[in-house]
Length: 296
Image (tube, rainbow, N blue to C red; front, side, top):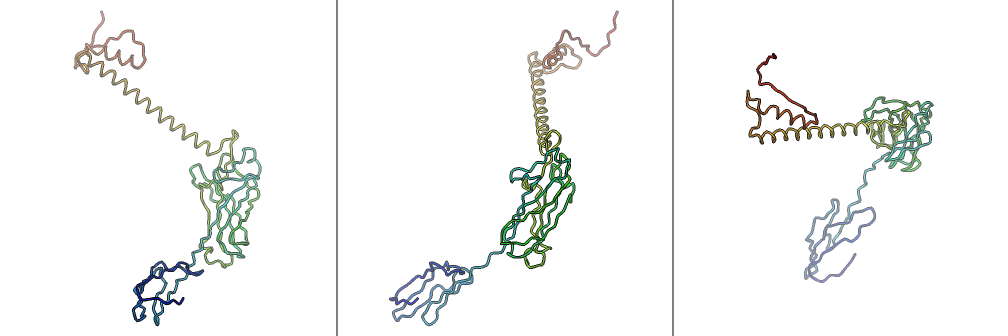
């Protein structure tokens, strides 16, 4: 860009950069002398890689190229059992009667940022876990297939065919993907893309018992029972504290907090009040002073 400028101070600002380049964010200051000499005041510019220089009275600004963002391949899975699918917020349920026959299981794998036209090895493993997510059986069934990426993103379906499942149990599908022939250096056998989350409901199967309950239902019931028990214990402790306070206050009315050693004058009163506070009917109370008495 050629311009005729009168003597003075100027600021050059890049508004837009060409496609594939980064815009210079630094304001470039320069001056034009009375004799037409151009002096560059700003010599360093941002971002890194951009160059600002003066050659034969001409300011030359070279933009830095836009760096390539790293490719981040990823997968997500959704399990299906006997034609029923799981969701992000709800696992798929298999009824008690369905467990008497092999269950048809398939897993839909959604992939992103893979290389178009490359064939990948996809391995699905059905894992059995307990209610807390601990793995009980790491390999109920494993299926491995070769799948071509028709585009950089898409879906594959992995079929487990018939699988025998136990009632009142919990299963999760794990998936692993890598480039079979090594064409994708980012997704290799030693560095596969995986999805192995025991808490992901979208890849979880829950089998029911004869009452229609699942392992999650049983676990939730046990937690509620423990909370109820803790609440009852706290209430009982509070009641015992109130009973103790009543007895102590009653003792103060007699002028004593508790009977002196060898003095049985207030003992009957203490026992009567304690029994009454506990809801026990009292007809008569007789306490000795610690000495044996004989009958005539």
